[in-house]
Length: 171
Image (cartoon, rainbow, N blue to C red):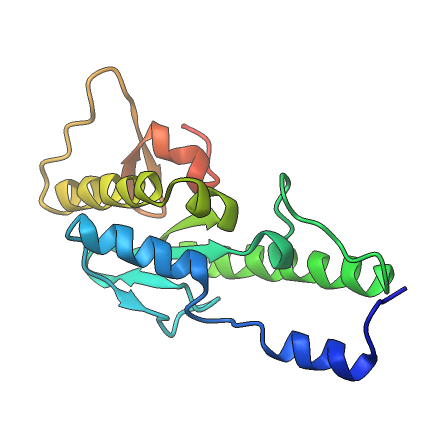
């Protein structure tokens, strides 16, 4: 049972941002601190929060509630069937958009809100590492890191440590 009136709940929900959220601002600041340059809210499938066209990178910040974080995603107690369906549909749409980006040749990095809140600098370093690998690959200097294999993803090569973040397994 909801503890507020429908009018109050409508007002609360209308105040939820879809752009420039707290976690996006944290990651934005951390990436700028590392000297990374990017575009915000690209007109690509799923409208990634950050985009590096030169390196074919799209970065998406996923809210724990809206995208069903396995660690911190919670569901409201009222109208449970609506919210279950909503989160499931969000996850399906996320997968479709990730597939579209992959087919377009992009690498999609996904970060959960909780990851960014815990350590935005680490997330930004991860973006920088993948960007640097893409830079090396595009310049034809990709040697692979000592002791780390290189696997192909969407016509591009990246080193195995980043494969799990991208949702792919080593070849």
